[in-house]
Length: 128
Image 1: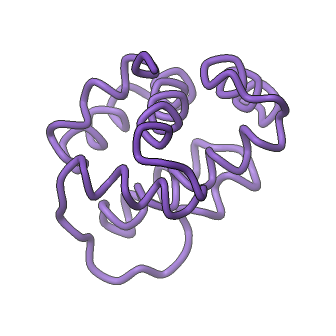
Image 2 (image 1 turned 30 degrees about the horizontal axis):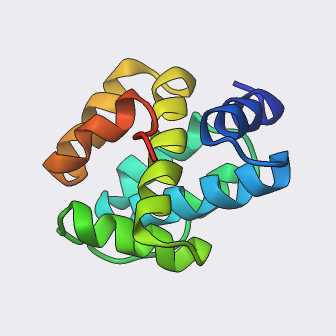
């Protein structure tokens, strides 16, 4: 998927004002994802995403961290400067777009690596 297609989907799903805002949110969510998955999986996922979104997954992070949904959303909120409820909306907009942008087996790997209680975020943004 091309960058403009990805950002248009995120912008529409997240109801953002611009593609720039959608890119900022996408980068933040991908950055948090990168802290939860192994570097080889992050590199594989990055290979399926357009530049510059792939950069958020290519940073050296060390070993994957394990944490729950609340911490996942807190980290997204910290990256975007949003409230946790807004971070849930943001994560849903990006993760649901990932399901269309990357092969199904990558999504399956993400579902296995991210907090189990985040699976609903892949179906679309939560209601506000």
